[in-house]
Amino acid sequence: MSSNNMADPKRQNKILRYKPPSTESNPTLEDPTPDYMNLLGMIFSMCGLMLKLKWCAWIAVYCSFISFANSRSSEDTKQMMSSFMLSISAVVMSYLQNPQPMSPPW
Image 1 (cartoon, rainbow, N blue to C red):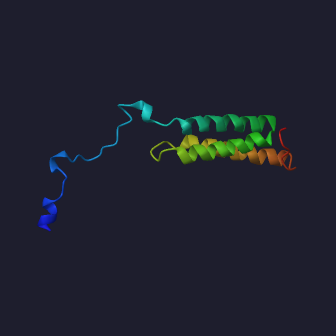
Image 2 (image 1 turned 90 degrees about the horizontal axis):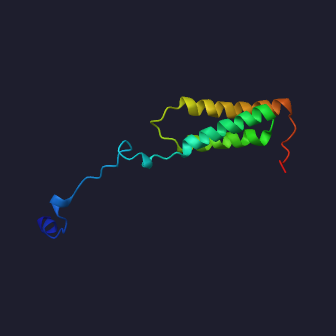
Image 3 (image 1 turned 90 degrees about the vertical axis):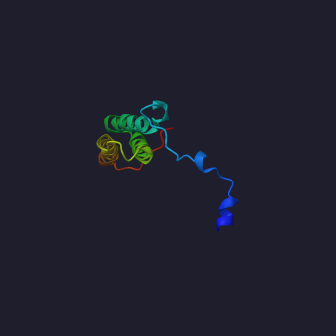
Protein backbone atom coordinates (compact mmCIF):
# COMPACT_ATOMS: atom_id res chain seq x y z
CA MET A 1 0.00 0.00 0.00
CA SER A 2 2.75 2.46 0.82
CA SER A 3 4.44 1.80 -2.52
CA ASN A 4 1.14 2.68 -4.18
CA ASN A 5 1.12 6.08 -2.45
CA MET A 6 4.65 6.78 -3.62
CA ALA A 7 3.69 6.09 -7.25
CA ASP A 8 0.66 8.37 -7.06
CA PRO A 9 1.43 11.41 -9.29
CA LYS A 10 -1.12 13.71 -7.62
CA ARG A 11 0.21 16.70 -5.78
CA GLN A 12 -1.77 16.95 -2.56
CA ASN A 13 -1.21 20.70 -2.18
CA LYS A 14 -2.76 21.35 -5.65
CA ILE A 15 -6.05 19.56 -4.95
CA LEU A 16 -8.91 22.06 -4.55
CA ARG A 17 -12.49 21.20 -3.75
CA TYR A 18 -15.04 22.31 -6.39
CA LYS A 19 -17.30 25.17 -5.39
CA PRO A 20 -20.15 26.00 -7.80
CA PRO A 21 -20.23 29.65 -8.88
CA SER A 22 -22.73 31.71 -6.98
CA THR A 23 -25.59 33.32 -8.91
CA GLU A 24 -25.38 36.46 -6.75
CA SER A 25 -21.98 37.40 -8.16
CA ASN A 26 -22.87 36.39 -11.75
CA PRO A 27 -26.59 36.75 -12.58
CA THR A 28 -26.06 35.47 -16.14
CA LEU A 29 -25.88 31.91 -14.81
CA GLU A 30 -29.58 31.94 -13.97
CA ASP A 31 -31.82 30.25 -16.56
CA PRO A 32 -34.81 32.43 -17.57
CA THR A 33 -36.66 29.56 -19.32
CA PRO A 34 -39.10 28.80 -16.45
CA ASP A 35 -40.09 32.46 -16.17
CA TYR A 36 -40.69 32.80 -19.90
CA MET A 37 -42.69 29.58 -20.04
CA ASN A 38 -44.72 30.69 -17.03
CA LEU A 39 -45.56 33.97 -18.75
CA LEU A 40 -46.38 32.22 -22.03
CA GLY A 41 -48.58 29.75 -20.17
CA MET A 42 -50.57 32.55 -18.58
CA ILE A 43 -50.98 34.36 -21.90
CA PHE A 44 -52.16 31.21 -23.67
CA SER A 45 -54.48 30.39 -20.74
CA MET A 46 -56.14 33.77 -21.04
CA CYS A 47 -56.48 33.34 -24.79
CA GLY A 48 -57.98 29.91 -24.24
CA LEU A 49 -60.44 31.22 -21.68
CA MET A 50 -61.46 34.45 -23.37
CA LEU A 51 -61.37 33.39 -27.03
CA LYS A 52 -62.48 29.78 -26.39
CA LEU A 53 -59.55 28.38 -28.35
CA LYS A 54 -58.81 24.84 -27.25
CA TRP A 55 -55.39 24.73 -28.84
CA CYS A 56 -54.36 27.80 -26.81
CA ALA A 57 -55.47 26.05 -23.64
CA TRP A 58 -53.46 22.95 -24.50
CA ILE A 59 -50.37 25.03 -25.31
CA ALA A 60 -50.80 26.69 -21.91
CA VAL A 61 -50.75 23.28 -20.21
CA TYR A 62 -47.62 22.38 -22.19
CA CYS A 63 -45.90 25.65 -21.20
CA SER A 64 -46.83 25.08 -17.56
CA PHE A 65 -45.26 21.62 -17.60
CA ILE A 66 -42.07 23.01 -19.15
CA SER A 67 -41.97 25.76 -16.53
CA PHE A 68 -42.42 23.23 -13.74
CA ALA A 69 -39.80 20.87 -15.15
CA ASN A 70 -37.14 23.59 -15.57
CA SER A 71 -37.67 25.39 -12.27
CA ARG A 72 -35.36 25.12 -9.31
CA SER A 73 -36.53 23.56 -6.08
CA SER A 74 -35.65 26.73 -4.16
CA GLU A 75 -38.03 28.91 -6.21
CA ASP A 76 -41.43 29.97 -4.97
CA THR A 77 -44.02 27.55 -6.32
CA LYS A 78 -47.13 29.70 -5.77
CA GLN A 79 -46.90 31.51 -9.09
CA MET A 80 -46.07 28.31 -10.94
CA MET A 81 -49.00 26.44 -9.41
CA SER A 82 -51.38 29.30 -10.15
CA SER A 83 -50.24 29.26 -13.80
CA PHE A 84 -50.71 25.50 -13.93
CA MET A 85 -54.20 25.73 -12.40
CA LEU A 86 -55.13 28.54 -14.78
CA SER A 87 -54.09 26.44 -17.76
CA ILE A 88 -56.01 23.41 -16.49
CA SER A 89 -59.09 25.56 -15.94
CA ALA A 90 -58.75 26.93 -19.48
CA VAL A 91 -58.81 23.39 -20.86
CA VAL A 92 -61.74 22.37 -18.67
CA MET A 93 -63.79 25.47 -19.45
CA SER A 94 -63.16 25.26 -23.18
CA TYR A 95 -64.36 21.64 -23.22
CA LEU A 96 -67.34 22.38 -20.97
CA GLN A 97 -68.54 25.08 -23.34
CA ASN A 98 -67.98 22.98 -26.47
CA PRO A 99 -67.44 19.25 -25.86
CA GLN A 100 -66.65 18.54 -29.53
CA PRO A 101 -63.12 17.33 -30.30
CA MET A 102 -60.61 20.02 -31.04
CA SER A 103 -60.49 21.10 -34.64
CA PRO A 104 -57.08 21.94 -36.15
CA PRO A 105 -56.35 25.67 -36.21
CA TRP A 106 -55.49 25.63 -39.93
